[in-house]
Length: 175
Image (cartoon, rainbow, N blue to C red; front, side):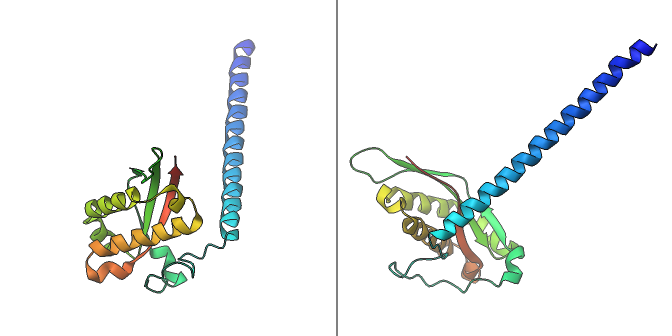
């Protein structure tokens, strides 16, 4: 009887050790992702990204940014990944872009969801008109984000246009 209890105890010990090891790996992975994210954010800010077009670029009339107290109430609407051929003459190039729109509230999100197909279509047309040189710079990406917001505002009902705050990129690959 004493011999039969030993393997059960060893199995339980191994399961506890294995569970602790898995937990340690998960915690280490989360810590690494947090550090990488903070490093990327600091790197992004060092380029001087101010959230809008630079003084050299055409200025687009945008509503004042929402107060920080309302930032937690914003709704984010992710569009499906865009894949488009670029307007390159010498070789075939394409871009893959993930776009998330920052909207003011659920009503604006519902109004936006009703016009997603024409918005997606026009964004695809816009992407196919771009070149690697245009999209390869920070200013080019900022300009594209402003153009995407303008497209979304063009199709949504006028009472919701000011509720579209920004376009954020969740992925951006040029090949």
